[in-house]
Length: 297
Image 1 (cartoon, rainbow, N blue to C red):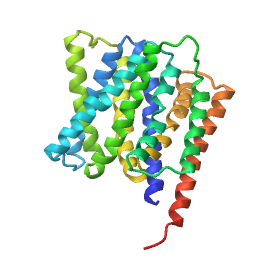
Image 2 (image 1 turned 90 degrees about the vertical axis):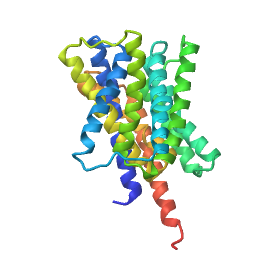
Image 3 (image 1 turned 90 degrees about the horizontal axis):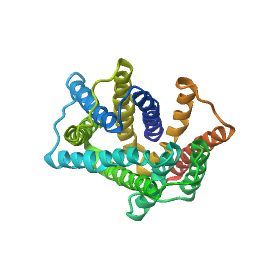
C-alpha cells in the first residue's frame, strides 16, 4: 500500500474512533455524569493507558524540551480548549448544529494551509469541500431556527481552535511517534481539566458500572484511537486532506447510533452520507492522478 492510501486508511480509522464519542457520551450522561466529568476522566484514563503501554511496546517517551512544551500547549490551548468550547456549545445549541459548526474546520484548514503556503489548493480539493459540506448539512439534519448567537460563537471558536491545532500538529509531529504525541497531549489536557473540575467541585466519581464502561470507551476508542491514527495519517496526506477525510466521522456516528442506540436513518441522512463518501473518493482519486502526473526525477 502506498503512503497516501495508507494515510487515508489511518485517518478513516481515526474518524471511526472519534465517531464513538457521541455514543459513549450519551451513555455516560444517562448514567449521571456531567460534561466536565466526562472530559476530565476521558483524558485521565487515556493518559494512564498511554503511559503504561509505551514501555511494553518498546517506544521511548523521550523528546526534546521544546517539543514537550509544544505538545503541552497543544493539549491545553489546543485540544483541551476545543473540547471545552464544543461541550459548552452543546448547552446552547442542538447537537446537530454544534457538530456542523465544528466540522467547518476542513474548510478553515484548507484555506489556512493555502494562505500560509503549507499546501496547494486545487479545484478538486475545492469540489471535495463543497460536496462534503453539503453532505454534513444533510446527515446532521441542521435546524437554523431560534439559534443562540452565543452558542454559535462558542461553536465557531471551537472550529477555529481545532483548525489551528491541526496545522500545528502537521508541523510539530513530523519527528514524534504518534503514541508518544498522544500521551503528552492527553496528559496536558488531563491536568488542565482535573485542576478546574476538582477545584470547582464538579467531578462526579459515584457512577454505576455502565457509566465507567462508557468513560473507558471514550478514553480508548474516542480519544487514543482517534488521536493516534489521525497523527499517523496527517503526516502522509497533509492537514487539509486529513481534515476532509475526517468528515466520514458523522457518517459512522449515524451508523453506530442505529446499531447501538436503535435510532433510524432518514433519506436525507443517506444522501448526506453518500455525498461525504463521494468527497473522500474525489479527493483520493484526484490526488492519486496528480501524483502519477508528477515528472520522475
